[in-house]
Image (cartoon, rainbow, N blue to C red; front, side, top):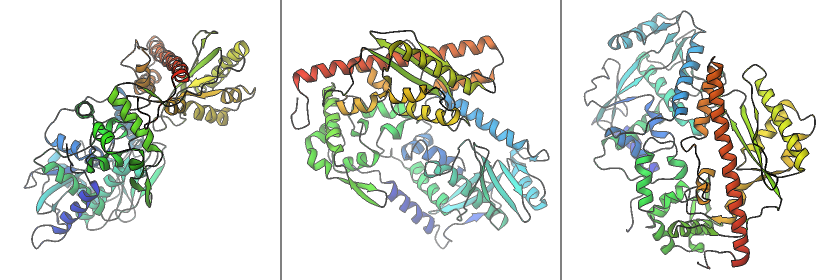
Length: 547
């Protein structure tokens, strides 16, 4: 396949800044017009403030920008994504209710919105809702229109503050799109009124008002210039896939099957995004090329950027190469016998909960458990209520159910997948206490299968998620289209309906999904125990041993 070009976004950002500094011949670095209409900005090129999200989420991807420019079809949004959009609107509306005398610009004809916003700011005194700010700027000789529709413009002693409502609880490196969106609002305001806004603020999902520093718009404009390169590209940009990088992208169903077909190294677990790009640069873009060109020592010596310096791949190299071999051979490779304590009975344990951005409490609404093995028993669940004390009700129900299991089976392992269950039990102990010590007993008996599986077996899959690992066991779900995001979306629907029958039906569906998670976890546990028996008789593998 040979050496392939590396998608270097840092280089793209450097080019973007040069484009900013170049401008048109004889022009300033960045020119803007306070009078041009961005609906027809000369070249027809336009950015809106929300475009940063499409470029940076779920991760920075120039191919996504290019595909949208080409009009490529995207996957429909998930139920949770649609629910988040609606919740975001409701969050914004609740904040709007604090300003009964606001001026709603969005209700005006579009051609009047910009002038009405300018007039309202100059008049002062009123909160402006959905104002319209416009300007044009020259990036590398091309005139580009920029439009911003800030949720709120708030009057101050002199000038206005700009505030956007977001479900985000914080604005950090993973919310870079939020910072850039506020920054471009600030730039548009400054270009329109000749001075920066009094403040840039985020009305966060917690209700807090977070402050964003305004730095003149340089980063935002450079990011637009970077995006412009992708929009204007005649050829499809080179962009590598990755498990975390591509999750949640509307073009995943387009890109991922192609990557699987060519056995791109990005489909492997353990291979981070920086390593994918580095392997492509070194001519090891596919799994066969990776195995042909690298052994453990050579791969382990690769240095990747890390914090303020670099760090080698090191011990991860053997796992990566074993995963590559497992994928190429289409079979799991046992590294060592799984370290699972021997018991006659195991309790599968799985929670359904709201992610922090959706619920102030980080609420667990299903505490599901079921004994399997010799002491197999019925499915049990602590279910949160829907009233004021519903969260505590769910916790106390879980403790009663767990106590009954301990009374019947003694100290049996509570088997779960990943760290979520342990973290949430600890959270609820802090929240409501553990009067009878049942939660402590659950914590003492937790058995996390995920690290056990990772240590024991290299899998021919792209991740160690439960829904992928269970495919190796022969377990088949009856509720195949359901998932964690579906569960959250349906639970939100249940909390909002006043129809008790409809609510009960929804909760029945979620409980059925949770029960299948428990069955799948048991299927994986049995599969691992079988691998352990096979490994004990046949010996385990390393990358040096081969098959």
